[in-house]
Image 1 (cartoon, rainbow, N blue to C red):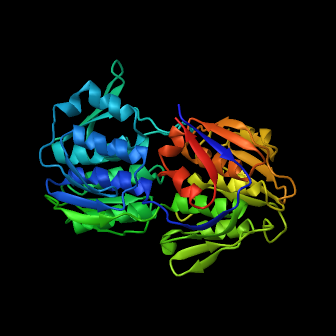
Image 2 (image 1 turned 30 degrees about the horizontal axis):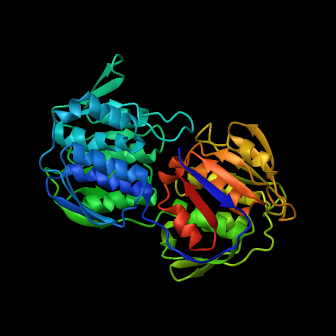
Image 3 (image 1 turned 90 degrees about the horizontal axis):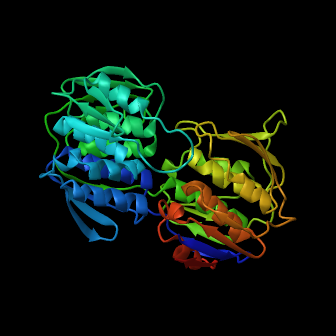
Length: 435
């Protein structure tokens, strides 16, 4: 198990460029299974979750070529259908959350898919019902094998259908879109997720010959086509990494520029940090975060305590609540963090409390943070990363703390952040990796 050793208190300064979007990468790489022609994807992040999906694509017979460290081509013209039924395949899927996005493409193109309980962050129950109900609406048959711990989906031909999703699931929406593009007839998806990454997937599929309308709304109409062709696609910068860098710059920065953020796709992320009192300057498509001596948490108009809660896009992404919580520990004022979607994501706050943060964990979903106003720095500590986003939040805390901290289980951080220690050292951080 690898670890980071961080000597806190070193100010960060300079420029940093966000990686390609992890969640978009998982969707569009899976979508390459929809055509036998070559698809080129650029700005691919070199992180564990994406790399493991790329390896799995190779195992199932996709011809994968690494053109550069951040550009790949995929050609799914000779898929190993027998391997898709194997124990090795289901085990690989069980260890990789992103593998769930293979189901839609495999089902619609090859008429059969195996579903294993996916891995990933330990942040609470992440059900597949939205995916499965959508596939069944399209005509798929579902069979359960409890002995092997898998579900099997099959069909002769998926047929378009009208559906209302039980929740605006991002991966569920993406999966159903990919299944519907080759279905016979027209599909309408109401209560669809409309995150920028889902929009990107739709735009890529349309360039491949799909007929998807309503992109960027929560009502999608998909007219099925017989086949799709190849294309090129460039990933957006990762909005979660942009938000993480804003928080890091606020707590330990002396002037940091975040390059090429695709500002129009950040939604309310900049506004949310500004409600924490953080000064953000937009310079074209870059963001500059000046040194923050103090930052004052806003209140609502009636004077009540500020609350940040996650919500489907264009609401606040749940992936940034951990970062916002850490940044609030040094703000002036108090804030309620309400994590509605996952019941285990706030349990890392006990580590921050050990570091001297004033946090009241109300229940598995809510925490009140009482800011120190930079009058009392956090103490260094030894901790372990429970998931990707809590891991980066703990890293930000350690960078700002007095003394030397150790973060174990950093493989979780590696799943979502590319070469993070080298990029932070370039800004002035004192961080080393112990393998």
